[in-house]
Length: 234
Image (cartoon, rainbow, N blue to C red):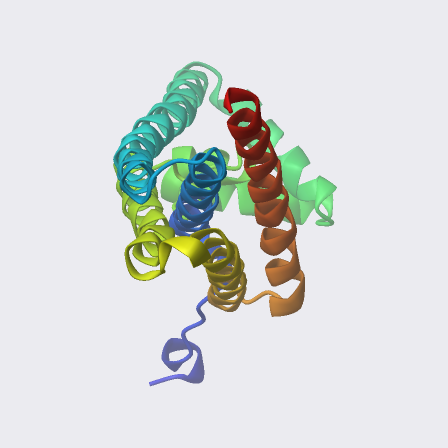
């Protein structure tokens, strides 16, 4: 067996589809649920009302994330299908123009005219639509939209993220609920940033700081609104 056949490369970009949905869902689950818990708690909500609000946020958020991801990624998938259908028509009606188009693309990437023409001809003989989808439209197997995968990943990751501050509500003493929620949520966000960065092969410090800053800001604003609302009601 040749060295070329033995060598198999894996790249982090192949994980972008589900990783983006998972990180977005988990981050949103932690931030939105903990923010709601803080807002209700600081508005002088009872522990029971805080827990009910948190559970409602988990269920509604997971369903919303699933629906939103499915709709948005489906729109991307529809656009890809429309572009591919257009490309099929052009390949059947204007094959020479499509060869020239692919040749110019390869010339723009650094090949001389003769070699670019040979590459275009050989790739189109092998898989004309695949060559144009990849090199003209930027559509590949790794980047293809997958609505169901995105929806399920987002819903599951949101529920997992939202369950963490809910667990704090259940376990923490009522007098320490606000402090425990803030501290635990920030810790959860740091862990999320580290895990997502390592999964994607990126630097952990920058990812952790990013999620902590924006998550902390969202919680602070919501807590402030809840505190003001509670004071005004009193």
